[in-house]
Image 1 (tube, rainbow, N blue to C red):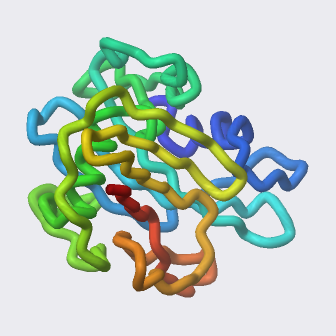
Image 2: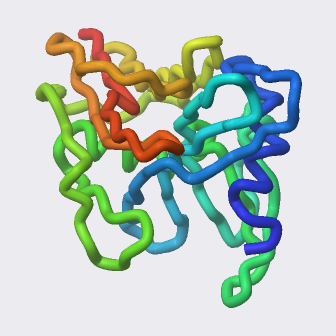
Length: 212
């Protein structure tokens, strides 16, 4: 892809409220991640972990991305902010790259993963399950959404609230990663990531809370 994913993110990350500014342009490297399959086979869904080494200490970010052959057909008011950029793929042509929290396909597949209905896939190998990605807790089945999701950005992360007929469910995507254990009271998914020195850590990437 031209420009590449890290190039797109280097321009987009500083626009986010959870970005930790170093006073320098981001210097990004790949630190981990995995993929989820779109049941329709139309949208690429990738959970990227990248580390910014432009400051005194490395800062690691979690950015779920989606790749589309055309813009989202029915954009919500926040979809402009969700568009990371466009890139040219050598085989597929132009791709629209979105922050996944603003893409309904990513939200649906992440919910399926948190409920045990989706299988995480290796980031760079086709048809290969990624067994290092682990679901913790047991979320109750969600009712059908009764309206569009809302997205709220905070310095800690991104909260996607899904209204249902039994009450709202909140999907929280962790953005700035620090080594931590899952909260036993929450349904979450954890995955490993590596710092530039090769040290491996694990932390929750996303949590799900439901209200009845």
